Length: 98
Image 1 (cartoon, rainbow, N blue to C red):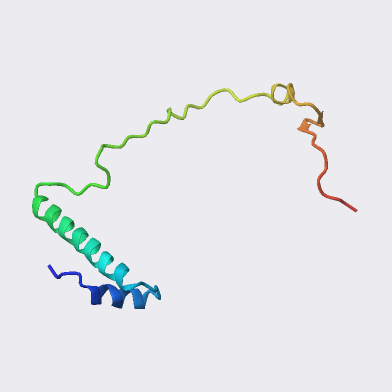
Image 2 (image 1 turned 30 degrees about the horizontal axis):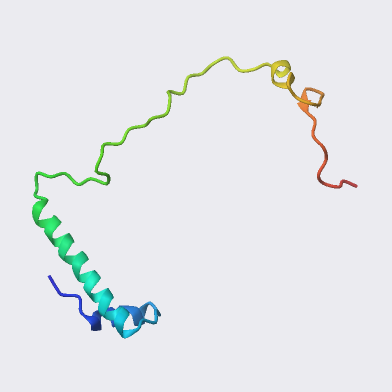
C-alpha cells in the first residue's frame, strides 16, 4: 500500500484548486494515511466468505401494506370544506385573470 505523503496531498490540493497551508498539508497527509491503513486492515479481515454490505444492520420496510379501501364520496370529501362550488373546493384566487 502506498503511503500518503505531504507532496501527494499538495498535488491533490492543486488539482482541486484548494489552497492549504503547510500545517494543513502535514495534518491531511497524516489523516489520509490513517484512513488508508484502516481500509487495508478491514480488507484483510473481510474474506471471501464475508458478504459485502451497505449497512451494518439488516434493513426492512417499516411502512404499512398498501391496501385498497373505499374512497370518500365527493360529498364526504367536501363536508369539512369552508367553501365548495360545483363539487369542487373553492379557494381564493391568487392570479389575476383578464
